[in-house]
Image (cartoon, rainbow, N blue to C red; front, top):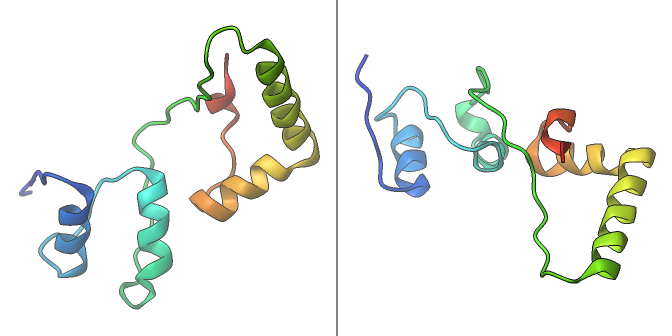
Length: 101
């Protein structure tokens, strides 16, 4: 196998689309966009290399904002909206392991 490294996602995607590479490794957000936009190529996800936790950053001493964000996330988890968003934007179900504190 010939493993090639590219400087950025655009180069990786162009190499894949043009047939210079047979596969590519990208983040799931980028991969979801390629899957959605390149139907003629019929790309498919083969496997997931790793999963990373998701984070929300806030300024220090923003206790009310932190509580509002926590409440919104809890509500979206409870009613399934967070999973729906993950499927819509990332083309994959929500991974509970990504929600750890």
